[in-house]
Image 1 (tube, rainbow, N blue to C red):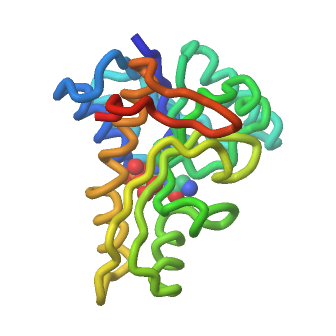
Image 2 (cartoon, rainbow, N blue to C red):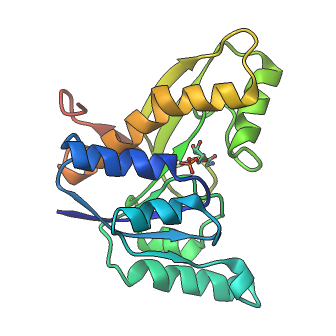
Length: 212
Ligand code: GAR
């Protein structure tokens, strides 16, 4: 059974998608042992509590220095001895120590088709604002493993979503979530949990026929 810790910052709809797919049996061999938020008001914490999962807040505001926050976050994750850490809308730059400790064992969901609209400053609604401002006709979401830089790690899954004329930022965000994020994040975790992910030359993929 894959032991997963999920890190969140906000509403937690991706966390909910993971929980729902575990309940429905589409996501197998997976147990969420804890949900950690950097933001004490995150609704994701309530979702975790409703599902009977330990939920806690580790916020930079609780510490005098960034270094102390980093140490606390690392300790907070390690306490649960996860096999996989999932960033489900976690909008804080990860401590380098955490990235090193969990190399190829941290998954992130990003709301665009990487390498477009990603990197420093591209998160949440800002991504969709930039997509609309540029006028691209296809956007989507990406699940990738986390490395030392922002949104540069090995890509595992992507799904494209159409941009429609007249879309507002919120409408586009909702469509990207419904059509892409809530599907590919649980699917990626399922692949890790069932041993079908491979790495070669700094790239990752799911063995053919195994992604469903
Ligand atoms: C999601 O759209 C996720 O892709 C994005 O934050 C949102 C969180 O929503 N993450 C990033 O932008 C990371 N760079 P949720 O709390 O409802 O899952």
